[in-house]
View 1 (cartoon, rainbow, N blue to C red):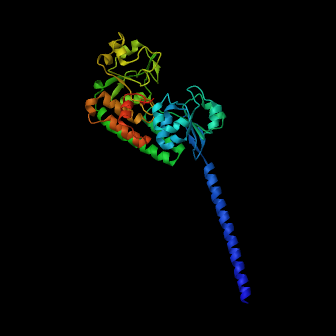
View 2: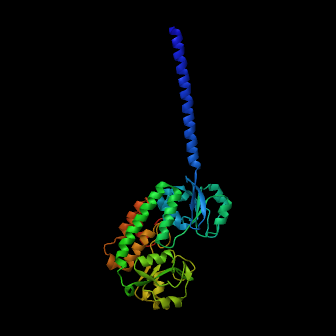
Length: 367
C-alpha cells in the first residue's frame, strides 16, 4: 500500500515539475517576444516639413546632416550615438572637444549632398536634416527615416528641441524640458530689463557673416530674435533671411551703432578684411558709427556658433545683452554662466582658458 502511495506521489511531483518547466519556458518565451516586439516598435512623428515619419522607438545610431543639430543631439545625451555627420573636426573643433565620440563618426554630408554609399555603411536608425534639405529625397530612397527640422525664433526652437527629445526617448525629453526651462527663465530675466529701454534709445545692431561679399542676417531669423531679446534693433531688418548680400551703400545708410561679426567671418581667405583694425583704416567703413565708436565685437563660438542655431543659443542673448548694455547687466558674469551651462547641459567641465577662448570666438588651443 505504501509502495502504491509513493508511486502516486512521485507521479504527481513529476507532472508538477513538468508543468512548471513548461510554464517557465512559456513565460521566458513570452518575455523574449515582448522584448523583441518592444525593440521593433515604431512610432509616427510629424516633422518641420509637415511630413509624417515612422521612426523606431529605440534609437541606437544617428546620422545628422544639420550642422547645428549635432550639438543639440549631444546636449540631449545622445552624442555617442552619432555615426554620421556633416561637421568635420576642422569645421567645429569645440564640438569634438565636448563630444569626443564625434571622432568616430563619418563625415557623409555636405551642404549640397550626401554620400549614400558611406551613409549606408553606418546603418543609422534615423537621419536628421535641415528643412528643405537637398539630401532628403536621396535619404527617402534608402528607406531610412528622415526627420527635417527648423527654427527661426525661440518658440520654434523649443518645438524643434521638444521634437528631437520625442524622437530620441524619455531621457532626451527630460533634458529638453530642462533646457527649455533654462532658456525661458533667462529670456524672462533679460527681457525684464531690455523691454524697458525706450525704442529711440535702443542700439541698432548689424550682424555680419562675410566681407567678401558682404553678407548680413535680416528679419525672420534666429539672429533677429536674439538681437531683439538683447534690446537691440536689427539694422538689416528690411532684408529677410540669413546670409543675405548687402552693399556698402546700404550699410552706410543703415549706420549701425554696433557691429557683431560671426566668429568664422575673419578666417575667410578670400576676404581683404583680416581683423577689426582693417575696418578702422578703411575709408568706407570708417563712415559707419559703429566703426567710429569702436563698437565692433567678435561673436563667441563653442560647440556650435553661438549666434546661429545650436544649443548655445541659450547663451547668445545673454552675451548680446551684456555686450550692448554693460551698465544694465553689471552683475552678469558670462564666463561663469558659460562654465555652468557647459557643465549642466553638455556634461563638460570647461577650464578658465577654454572658457575665455570660447568667449573670444577662438578655437581650442591645441587645434
